[in-house]
Amino acid sequence: MNRAAAAAARGPETPAATPGGPPHPGAAPPRTADEALAALLAFAEPYRDDPRVAGRIAEAHDLQAGLAARRGETERAAALYEQAVREHDAAGVPWYAVHARAELAGLAARRGDRETAERAVRGALEHSAAYGRPAGQASLHLQLADVLCNTGREAEGAEHLLEAAHWADEAGDSDGMGAWARHHLGGALLRLGRPAEAATVLEDALADIDAERHGEGPVVQTRWWLGDALRRLGEHEQAAEQYVRAAETAAGWDGDGARDHAVLATLAAQALSAAEIDVQAERAYERAGALWRELGDVPALIRTLRARAWLAVRPDRAGPAAARELMAQAERELTAALAATPPAEPAAAGAHTPAEATRPGADGTDAGPPPPDTAAGSAGGVAARAAVSSRSACAISSRAAAGPARSGRTASQARARSVRISAGTSPSSRHSAPARS
Image (cartoon, rainbow, N blue to C red):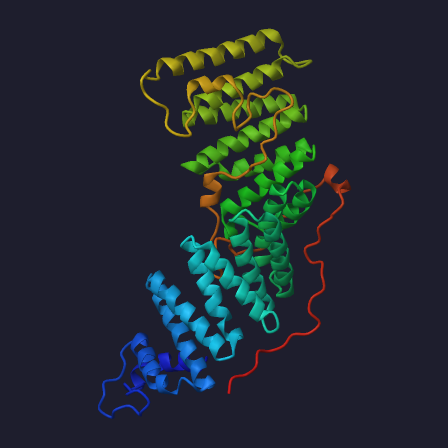
């Protein structure tokens, strides 16, 4: 514990002080940590020119910021963290401001101030490079990756996610922060148009991510991204397996999560159709249609009916008569929806209108063979369930645990494992931060 922390912890044993002098014998002792820190600052202020005292003052402001943050006083906490950073820098010990910079970055990110968040976390990485522990380095790289990915800089964000995974491995936390970094790295690689690398990384992440410790959202999102990556690689049957397993996890969700469930069921049907596993594809489309009906999404329901009609005219399937009946059913659903829609009522922004059932939509259910690529793979219900770590102030979480066994490979066994998270040379030596006098 540093001296400022000790002063705060002593509480009632520390009497009030006059600036630069000893405490008054009869003065009432501080009753709270805030009062103790205020007394310490009042006592230390006249000696601010001494670098050693200046460092203690900076520590006291860091502690005050933490207390303010716990009370929800984010503006005051951010100002105090910034003050602590300036004072540590002025005292010539910027490496002691790493904690304040990291906390400031988290507060700024939550307030939407990405510029301050980026500046703070880059400073923390710069000054912790020589003295930081592997776990701390992993957390800082995760924070910076979060800022970068949320400002459209996926390529640089992926580099820091790779670094985060490496440092988590160095810290012995491969199934914690390492798994979370791999999860996000896979999504970033997919968005960068690198599906083979994304699939490899996401398969690795699935070995360590499970619903009990990470939450259902990250598990579903990882399988969703993996399904999208496999589908882009033409491995439709394996993609369908991931979509089905993700849909099974999402089956109990409500709200936006219920829509995720329906979208995943539709994606599974599309992948099975592309793999020409027609019997299972028909069943999957039927199940997806039932889910869309429960949600009241008539256009999506109609698309599943039309997709089933496409399947019916494939060789050795039900034939044109069955296809016509499915199209007629789709027409009846559309007619009923149009009849129930008040003519003067404008559609809500972003909402489906019945007429949209006549063209393929985002769920791609009416594309016919082959279905379109729907690799976006991220819906509101999934994002809402992403776990937020107590270690990181950013949206990227570091909670993890041992997960289910790695899924088997078929065609993907032949794919080169082009990304090795643990690759790279770690620093040959670690140094401790200089001790304070």
